Length: 175
Image (cartoon, rainbow, N blue to C red):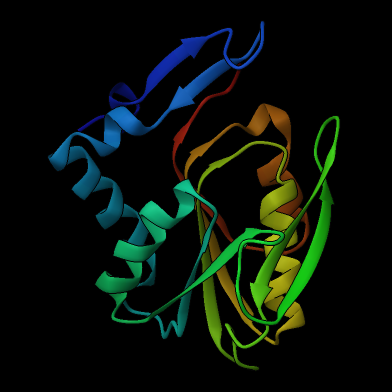
């Protein structure tokens, strides 16, 4: 099945010139959602993975079932102020602003092998900040996977330059 055909594109949202990739239509399609999860998990089935890390919020929808499929734990990266326990925080820059993400300080144990999953890679700021947190906690990142990559915005390239193995299921080469 062509997963790209299951993703709705919304022109000029949230601002003019942006062609938003709406994954909710894929999530609503049972066979497409199952295929996406199977494909996200497949490269890691034969590897020892201790944790799957999902990024707030759509990344949770993909990371949790992949963790289930891999029979491993799930850790989450959220926006600053959303987690109730002691956290490590990492600031990052977006195109026109900055933000901060956080993880519980005990979410990853030193030496654990980790994969990071999110719905979409654009400029890579959030994913790179999540990688920083994982590494500060002593995790070893085995891979970073996305449902959608927008390589023209440079995020997946930044992750690769950092030496990370990056995968995606659907790619849009232009807006």
